[in-house]
Image (cartoon, one colour):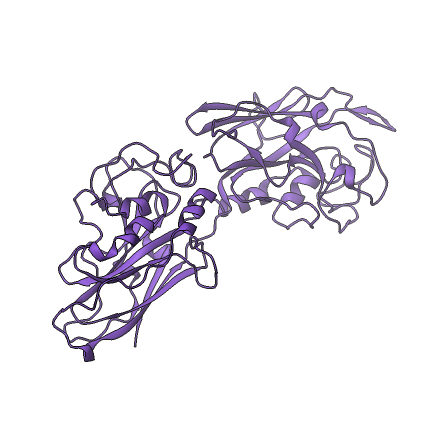
Length: 454
C-alpha cells in the first residue's frame, strides 16, 4: 500500500464503543464476549509480472545477442512498479548486466510514463560465484569451459565489477559500449523494452586478440519491493542468477520468477459493527453506496469517515475502527502473514458486519452478506470457528475497475485519493460486475476470519 494510503489510515484512530447495548429481546445474562481475528493468508508474490528474453529480434531460435542484435519484450506496469533484469556479459566467468536494487522507474515524479534511453541505470555486476579469469581467454569462461558450471568457486558476494577486490583485475568495456537499454511507452500501462548489443566486434581486447562481446538470454521482472533478484553485498540466492551469470542460461531463474509472479493483496484498515437482526448498516446489495464512508474504505483504505459516523448507522449497537495489525504499534494494512483482532459483547439477535478494502484494486472490499453474520444460532448458542466462507468480495460501484496493482487509478497507483472513472453505480458481488475480466482469488485464499466466544 502506498505512503499516501498509509498516511491516511495512520490519521484514523480507534473509536470507542458507540451506542448502548440496545434491546434485542435478550437479558444481560445472555451477553457473550466475542473476539474476531482477520488474518491475511494470501500468497506473497514479489513480482507483478515476469518473463524470459532469449530470441534476438530477427532470429527464429534462442541464442545470444551478438553485436548489432537486440532483445525486445513488452511489459505492463503501474506507477509504483519498477523494471529489473539480468543478462550475462558472455565470454566472462560470472559477470552480468542489470539495474541496481531499486530497479528502473517507469514513470517520472509527476506520474507520467517515461520513454527513452535508460542505459545509465544499468551496471555490470560480478555474481561472486566463480573466480574471474581473462575474458574469452580463461579456461572456465563461458566460451572456453568444458561444461556448464565449471570453474573454481569464489564464495563471494554480488558486487559492482569496479568494487571487486578479490583475484586478478581485468579490463572490461563500459556498459554503454556494450549494451543500450531503451524503454518506449506504447499506451496505457504498456511499455516496450529493448536490450541492444551496440558493441563493436573488437569490444573485448585480450592477450590473445580482440573479440566480440555477446549478451546472453536473460530474465526480466516488474516489481515493487527493492532487490528483486539479488542484493548487493550479499551472496547469490541460488534462484538462478548464477546460471545466467556463469552460463547465459535463464531457465532456472525463469522458472522461479514464473512461480512467484502475481498480485500480492493486502487488506486495509476497516470498520466493524454489531447490529440488530434485519438491519443493513454498511451496504445493501443492488443499491448505491450510502455515502457514509464505505466508499472511502473501498477506494482508499481509509476508515476515518465511516468510523466517525458509526452511531448513526442503521441498527448499530456498537462498533469501532480496526487499523493496527497485531504486534504493531502503528496503523496500517495487513500483508500476508499479519492480522487484525478486535473484541466486543453481543446478545442473541445481534449480528456482525465489517468492511476492509481488497487493496491493489479500485473499489473492491471484503465483507459478509449485507445482513451480516449471525452471532448466535436458533438455540442462542454463540458462534465460534472459522467463518471465512461467509465473507465475500464486493464491488462498491463507485469507481470503474482496472487491472489490480497495475491500473492507473488502483489504490497504490493513483496520484491522489478518490481518483478514477465513475463505477457501476451499485454495490454488488465483485464476480457479478459486467465487463470485469480480471482474475481475483477466492476469499478463503486471501483471508481467514475466525470468531471465538467466551
